[in-house]
Image (cartoon, helix red, strand yellow):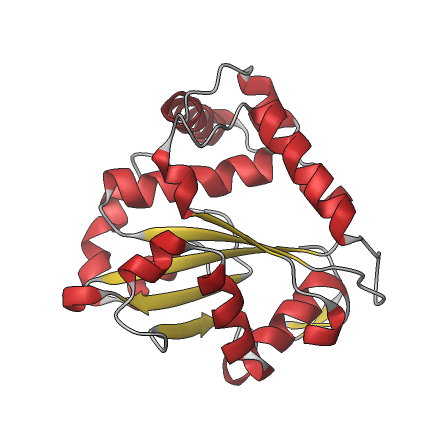
Length: 234
C-alpha cells in the first residue's frame, strides 16, 4: 500500500476503504467473503466465525507481517519453519482475520486490498540471501501451481501477488494452517483512482493467464477469494 497515512489511518484509496469495511461494515465484509468461497463455507463453524485482528481502529490500524503467527498459541511453533521459506520481514498484510472452523480448528484470512490496476504491477526488491530464498520458494510455488510460465513473470511483473500466493502455499501445504487469500478490489473509488468492475475482471483474467494459473491443475486456487466492493457498500 502506498497511500498517505496518518498514524496508521488511511486517507484515501484501498487502505482507507478497507479500514472502513473492517471497522464499520464487518458483517457486509464477512458475507462478501463467504459468498465467494464454498471452500471457506465448508470450513467455518458458523457464520459469525470471523475474528478480525487487523486493521482495527483501537490498535491504530496496525498491519501484520510474519508476526501474525503470534495471534494464536497453536501457530507459534511454526515461526522457525517459516524461516525455511521466507526472510524475517514478510509481506505486510492489509488485513488479517482468524476464523473458527469445525472441531476447534483455527484458520486464517489474509487480505490484499487494491483500488486500481496499477497497484497490481510490482517486482522483487530483495537482495542477497533474502532474494535467493524468495526466488527458490516462489519457483517451488510456481511449480506447485503447475505453471509453465517463466519465473521472471512471477517476480518481476506480478511479484506482490506471487508472494501472497507463496504464503498461501506455505501455510496450507507446509505448516498445515488452513488459510485463504482474499483479493479485495474496490470498484469506482473516487478518493484516488477509479477502476470499474469490468476493468477488474478483465485484468484478473489477464494476470492469471500470464502467470499460468489454472484451477483444474491446482486445488489451492480454491483458497483464493476475489471480492469487488462498490463504494455504495462502504
